[in-house]
Image (cartoon, rainbow over all chains, first blue to last red; front, side):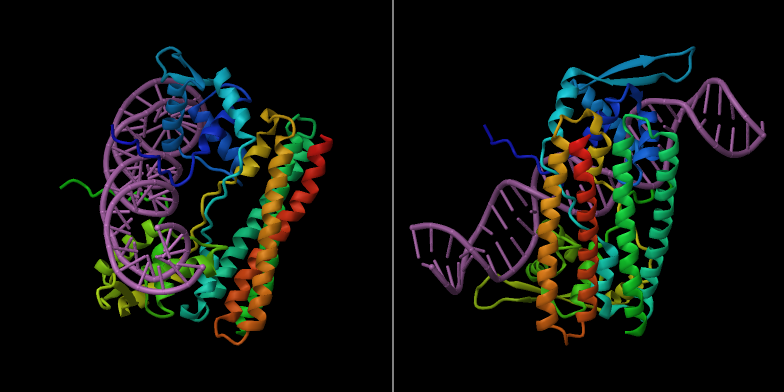
Length: 189
Length: 189
DNA sequence: GGTCTCATGTAAATAGTTACATGATTAT
DNA sequence: ATAATCATGTAACTATTTACATGAGACC
């Protein structure tokens, strides 16, 4: 018998756990999962339909989620997924697994590093564009944080939501501080 | 005639430019490119052999790099690549292109967000592990920065090298600050 | 009539990873 | 001997994206 080849994934799939975790807060459809990710996780997570649907099917085959198809008067049927006990167990185990760091790929820093080959002014322009983006990010995060503090402060999830927002805010501020010390060096260089 | 399908890449390939940029500093082999990336770009970039070699071949087919095979007394032949004029032009143009942000995928923040499903103590453990990693990162970056300031301060590339290190240092410090404000909340919660 | 939202999915494509395969030379 | 480094590449595989395909109902 030929030896089974080991799987050679670029990185293990964490989307599965994102889905399990969201389903733990209540049954939903693929469509609504996508909306949830966009509305609440977008500053640290993302998913596309083309990824969500196949993974839901896989989780179903594996017995980690249950599928209930609702057909309401001829309308396109909603497939509502919910966690099974096996899924809940898998989810709990994931919280103890070591964090898998993404391989870094920072295009801006790559440009800076290779800056000797850059046309004059191009580095400053890249940093300025990045700065504008991060300023916008920071404003959005701070707005959401204020919103949440008044509207959802008594939700059982509020403390965690606030922690993820704080992470974004501190990261954005650090990025801005870096831009502000870097831009002058690029113009006077 | 059937319409040509548009390319559906998950994200455009920036490795090509990383390679072009490194070749702009002088001709090298695939093997040495890998070492360069590991030694000097590792805190913001990475490449594997399985990716480098095929892309070098592609750049060659496209006419952006020149290939010179050296066979020294029967030893495995070194393939030394250098930039062509077309490659140099492509590299210069890249510096003006808009930065493509990576889709965010932060596993730690995902765990925090889904924390209500977490076993007691698991979140704190994840944050503590992350904190240890970032502490280590910071120490390394600060060490390299000091090293460089004494050994390479007069290199024409020194200012840019320092900028990329500063970016890493500020980001690591922000991450540590977040850990330090978050850990107490997780234990007292 | 037109556009937006709800709702499901498949197809085609690339990116990028790990494991495999090969072999010479050099240091321990 | 044996391990490490030099040096090249292919094979198999998964992740993940964008574009395509479809259709109903709601709203303007």
